[in-house]
Image (cartoon, rainbow, N blue to C red):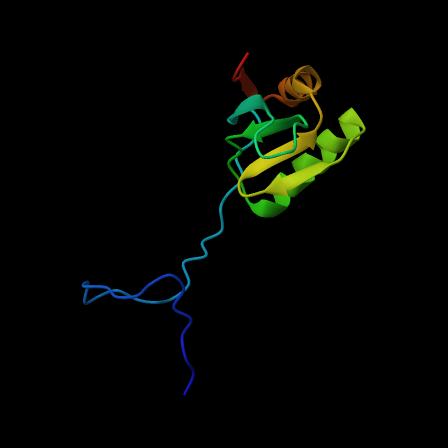
Length: 111
């Protein structure tokens, strides 16, 4: 008898509820359809600046690939974590220009 994984579900009143994993593959939108938000964040980072890219619609592998390209473009570290792509340092203009060159609609958040 195999036990099903019941992640974050304690009780359901729905008689038709199924505990199966709902890991549907997320289709990555092309860059022409992406609307990305670029901002600078300093909160909970010890005063260091980080450039954030939010709003990427796609699977985790594609987001990690975009993070890698952005890191190479800026020559710094960074990564992908929790639906946000981050690049170390204040590279708002470089990141925005690179994303526009790829065809995405870029909006800048913050000052």
